Image (cartoon, rainbow, N blue to C red):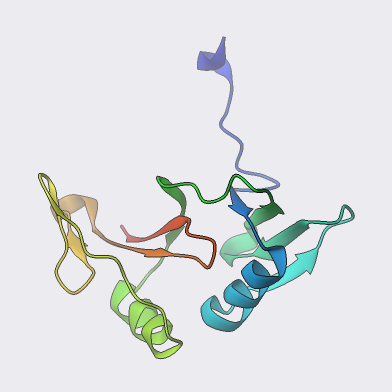
Length: 130
């Protein structure tokens, strides 16, 4: 059945739960620098990312999601991380089989480089330079 269906990429490329929608909006606008818009229904926000992509944030008591919830593809991981650190963001460190970060960055050879952070709601967000 699903082998012939696409995974949704539009209108939203990711859906993030938030316990506090106002706190989430502040984080994404102030810390990450993403433009957020109200949706017609209360408790929902839309974030505008690059190249016409968008993501949805919705208020729910079920936040956070522990696994990676969204991935942002960046051209220059170091530059993006530097800017986000200047805005107060802390990157996660991992040391487990197959995944070890150094200063927040994992080197994945031909697959590129990656880093992760938690948003204000505790969701895990990935940055990837392919």
